[in-house]
Each structure stands twice: as structure tokens, then as C-alpha cells.
Length: 59
Length: 550
Image (cartoon, rainbow over all chains, first blue to last red; front, side):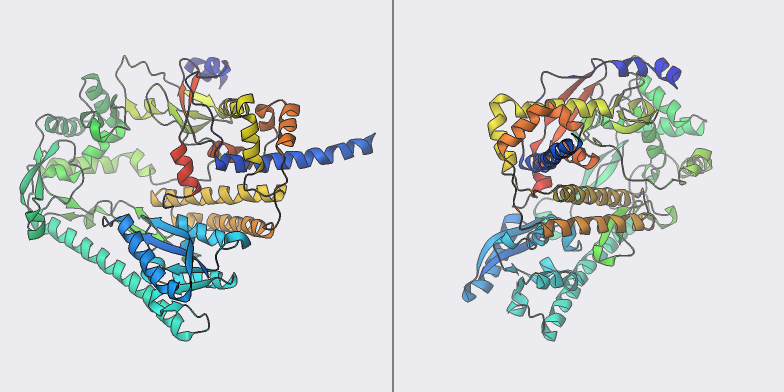
């Protein structure tokens, strides 16, 4: 498989890093994206709040 | 009493959206205002068939979602015309939901509130549902029969693009006096001097034993413009760089090159979305009809480019090809695992990149070389493929910019005040609801495109509907809780983790998918420079979030 990939040039190209173009639009925080991030941060903060308690128990 | 108004307009017969909305609202107000009612919310579906059940119409489904929220701000629903809202048995499927949430329904045809205990009201609403269905069926039948008759008897050109090799010319005024008075002409096909010889060459080459690829490559090498290149104005989405193999086949299979007008080759028909759940309504699909059922004109309607005998020989040769017999044996498709499907375009040729797994890794490839005969000197690489993980990482890196110091305060406040629920189970339910809805949409699209038969996906649709229902139940149960996010807590968390790219590593697949979908992003990937150009398409996000009618 790797040989096939190399022959097609895919293996070497795949190893190269991907660059985001300088002409790209800046991201926009839409209401939909804000809702998704709110859900994510709520979950992460809830997990974070529970983590120190476990740490204290381990200590 | 505060009301939500529901209305609908179909754009199929060129109805004026504003005028229709206006009279439906006016009629609704005339009904409720004498009783002290006032409309405080509007839900208006544009361009969606009445045959779609409420949960499949964007605005009606939003209304159904809203009515479960105690904070919705209205206690009754009013419609301007029953037939606009309820088709066939939709009333009996929808009214119990309103009743359950103690929402009244006001309908002009019953002169006010629909009484759930009134047998007469129930019968009347069922009657109007049946009339609504009958009206639609009559129009469909009348139009289809007329089109078949006009094709068979007159060989009339009934619209659409002329096939490659022909062009349209006027064929006299329309026989309908009103249309004739407006100057509307009938049309007829006439051989296009530039492209008709190419069609004839394709038939001759195929009869001589050349395959689709050989013919396509020869035409490309000679610089003959492909159909999309020849008519580039109407094919702006195609690169026109060469002949597609499939185009050659499509030309060889078109019976209109024999001079006869043909109608009904790929008729649209309606089939249950889920055979176990008729309340989900129908989907319209297009399928190739049996050639014996195609409607052909009795006489030649335009100048033929190929004689009947040669055409029949070509059809026999195509039917005997081994590869074509295998085409029908498709394995059932599963839901797409690709997170960024439809978001990527190949910068080298402008084609959409499709999901492709390589060595168990998900990624996206440009398939132009597999479907088109490109010129020998075309610089497009044979393989253009990019791993999904790289794109996801790059996207989160790009999204991180939204949290830049200049934006940070505003963006964190926006997130903290976003209309979301505080519990992880609830945020999961939001993702589930969206994900299940999208999966259902994908299955519907597959059915509509004839890729999947409804029977094949019935069980899967059931599972997805159950998942949607469970997620909805979680959201309803959590209705009374409010968000507790603080901008500072989010900022500390981001700093602690080291930015959004680090957050990405902690996400569930559903969360990752939701972020990518809500980013309203389209990406042009350049394989030569290994560069991705990110563009934001906010219109996409708007139509997904709230629908176009508000």
C-alpha cells in the first residue's frame, strides 16, 4: 500500500503540513456556533470542577 | 390571547410569497381579533409542499419545537386557511400534540377554536384534509396526462434544455390564446451545426467498437468542447475541461436523437419515507422508467441525428456490457462517517472533493481524473487527497482566531449568553437532535436520488427517529434550567488548555461535527501548494438555523 501511495505521490504530499491561506476569511461567531461552544465549555467546566475532587481523594 | 400564526405557500405555480402571506395573515387576524386575539409569532413555510408533514416543514417543525417551551410567549395557533396547513390526515397527527401542550388551534373553516371534544370539528378538519389532498392529486393527474398526450400526439417540446446536438427554435405562437396574446412561443428542436456532427460521431464510434473512455479522450484531445463547456453559461458549476465518460453514455442512450419527442424517461413519483411510519409522509424520487413505458411521439417531431436501426443497435450493445449489469447490484449504504463532507472544493479544478478512505484513514479526494478525459497536458495531479484529521486541526486552528484578544470579550459574552442548556446531557441532546436530523436528511436525499430504496433504510430511519425523540425529551425536561456560563471561566479554561486546538482533542465526535457544521465554512484545497483557503458562507448558516421565511 505504501509503495502504491509513494508511486502516486500521495505519501510524500501527505507528510507535508497543511497551510491555511493568508487570503482566508476570518471566522465568524454565529449564534449557532456560540450555542455549540456554550455546550462544549459547559461540559469541559463541569468536568474540570469534578477533577480536583478526585485529585484530593488521590492525595 | 396571544397567537402564533402558521402559513405556507408553494412556489411551484409561481405564487407571490408576500401576497399569499398577506392574505393568510389577514384572514387569521379577522378570525382572532374579535375575540381579543393578537399574533405575536409567525411561522411561514415557503416552497414546501402541503404533502410534507409538519415535522418535515422547516417553519412548522420550528413551531412544534417552540410550543414545547413554556417561555414561548403564545397559547394558541391560528392558520389562514386549513388546506394550507393540513393535508390528508395531517390534522389528526398534529392536533393531539397541540392539545397535549394545551395550545388551542383556530381555523377559519370552523369559525374559531377547534374543539377537541367536538365530533363535528374532527369530521370537518378530516374533510378539509381530504379535499386538500384531492385538489393536489387532480392537478398532478391533469398535468401529467396532458403532457403525455401532447408528446404522443403533437410531439410538442415541453420544456427543459435542448439535448446536446440540438438548439431551440420558435415554432409559432402558443395555442392557448392567453399565452399567445402574451407573445409566448412554442419551441422545436433543430440540429445545432456545431454540435450535431459530434453526436453523430459518438454513435458511429461506439458502433465501431470504441468505449466511452476512448471516445471521451478522443474528443478531449481534439479540443471539442464538452456539453458543459459548449453551454458554459448554464453550467457554471462544471469546469468544462474535458469530456466526462458518463456524458458519452448519456448521449448514446438519448432516444430524442432519432427525431422523436420522448417524455417520461425519468418520472418523479412519491414513495413513503418510511414504510413503517406513514405519518412521516412521502418523498419525491426520480427513477428511470422502463423504456417500454416511455411516451414517444407518433411522428418525428424534429430532424433526427441518428437512424432508428443504429440507435437500437447501440442500446443492445450497452445492455450487453458486463459492467452495466453489475451496476444494479449496489450494497446498502451506511451513514457518512465524514465530518466535512460537502465543504471541500479542489482548487485545481473547482470540483467538489468527495470522502475517500485510504489505508483506513478518512480523507477527501478529487475524482476528476476518474470521471473525465482530461487533455494530455492538463496539470491536474492524478491523485489529490487530504487527510480529514489535518483539515479538522487546521479548521480549529483557524477558528481559534475568533477568540483573538480583540474579539475575546465580545465572543465570550456571546457564548455565555447563548441559548443553551447547562447540563452535558443537554448539550449532548442538542448534538443528537441535529445529528439525527441530518442523518435523516441524508437518507431522504439518497432515497430521492434513487440510491437507496425506502425499504432498505426503514429500520435505520426508525432508530434515528427514536434518537431524535429521546433528545427532544431531554431538551424539554431541561427547559426550566438556565445557563451558568461565565465569560471569565471560559477564558481561564481556554488559557489553561492552550487554545482551541487543544479543546478540539477533548471533543466528542458529535461536538466536533457540530462545530464544523456551524462554522459555515467552505474550503478550497490546493494540492500543489498544500494550502487551504477558508471562506465563510453565512447564508448557509442562516438557512439552517432559522429558515428563510422569517
